[in-house]
Length: 342
Ligand SMILES: [Zn+2]
Image (cartoon, helix red, strand yellow):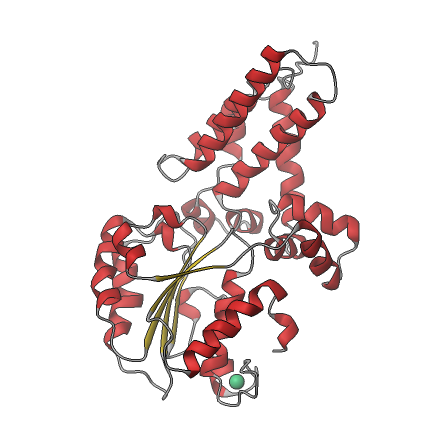
């Protein structure tokens, strides 16, 4: 791995952790916060693999060739990760239950490290832990054995129990500016137009934009928007829209349908962001024309409702309902509904 593979905006944090590690003061529990898809996962992976690497040269990046580097197979399902001292809990479901935390994290806390390095226990999308799962984790966070480090990665830290948050040292990975993101995407072989589109689809986060561009998710984004327009044009009901675009993890895992698999990688809050984006872009156009105060007020209220739907996305147990609510809020923007005359 070369230094340039760590996104530039993540390098200062990588260096900070590296210094802490070398001075033996790396916090035993790290809460890494930042927008979804801004490189948190890539940062943690580069850091822990760099420490575990047998052949690591300065500045401490994984060599990709030694037994340790080869054992950690990047981003596979938890069952497939063969590294003895890096446990990466990553689930595709909406929640991480107590059994998963016990089996993959707590059981590993007690085991001795296989190599002479630190043992890393990583929970991605930590906000998805259920309250019992978080409570089960508390004790391990409180009294971790020596040379054991936890990483809790999340873009929604407010969903973690305060007791979990207070036991972790918090680090924020900032999302780069629009211009920096575009430059980074262009360095990764996207042309300017593609980069702009992908960044819009990824709600401004560059790493996710790159993934979306490379794994066929842009087409989904496109279909999603076309379908949304059908609702606004009165050709489709918001209930059938929300049903179509709510693919639950269980449905996706049962089905061998590849496209469902791809869509599952797009979390609900991003799907909601796409609806919000549509509304924002409409409002931007709306204010270019003469608009009454009353209309503007209604547009602002609708926008606030849209934001609320996304904020409370996790609280509502039926994801399909989230999409429906967002459609309903969107339709309150004056003039956005354009029923086609039969
Ligand atoms: Zn290595």
